[in-house]
Image (cartoon, rainbow, N blue to C red):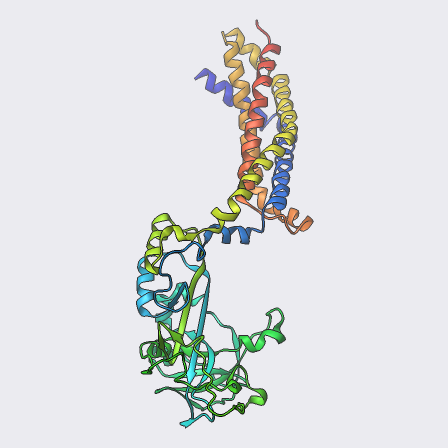
Length: 453
């Protein structure tokens, strides 16, 4: 009890009677902490990419097609392509994977008649689409729905309502200038779709004017697309020549009107690039390409194995960019950060010594009194060490709490400086180790200077 009382008394004096001096010591320790924090941040900016890229490296999977021997793409013609239908989604959701932040999704729709009339010179028009989900479907397909989010402005007609989506009404939105207007009906090989509004994609995309035609998509209820994906066309496909496709219908029409091109006699043009899937042609289709997928967090080994089983590959064929390309960068950063922090840690040693000199000078009377009552050198050593550790711990807590605001200042100095937990951990570890190691010989020195009798 006597020992605890003396320790408590020494620490109390540090933050009462000796508060001004203790405050200076705390400030010095905090400055030394952020000197090390700046060093680790600088090393990170030199050896690592942005935190966003690092997160992608850690949370992504890619299909190593070059080394793959499996029958990849069981559901499609291309390796890694899968139809985003109920069958695939239900199996995917059973795995309980984290949310998807990136995956390549492509969707297209073919319409064969406009307002009940066949299109001149071609069997169909192939347009890009974006699926829109009802609220109930969003809850089911949330992992994909966020990646399919399409921002637009309605410039004519109206938007699709939640009621229409939940009641499975076959209504759609069309981009302006694509040879359809509000009120038109598209016949997608027996599946009718009514245009209720014209839209324009929101601005803000780099190279907006150049890429805009490639970003303008029809917005179609997912339920309608699912209906089309469950009803492949009854055609005898022979290299895609059963459906005539005139090049004049390729892409966005000029002056809001399609003009079929003059073709030589008996020439057949057809395209199956986005409409043929698993040796079938569908009126509409959503293709999910899993060659590269990024999750919101790193998946477990079990999740990886289950996902590999779902898409029909070996788990070894699913690689992580972190393991393949980025792990060595992390090791190099850790080694360099620790090395430079150790060199800069000399500043921490000076602060630790300063604390000991303060404690020794201000508590000689306490040590003398304790010696009179039989206190040993070991006891005095421990009193010094515990007192110093209390100040160091307080400085560490304050510094950790200040790390985010200080990082904002660092970021203004250099845009590459970003807050990283690894920098904070390395800084804290070096700060504590160097400070404690410096306290031990300093505490021994304090014992030697304290009176014996």
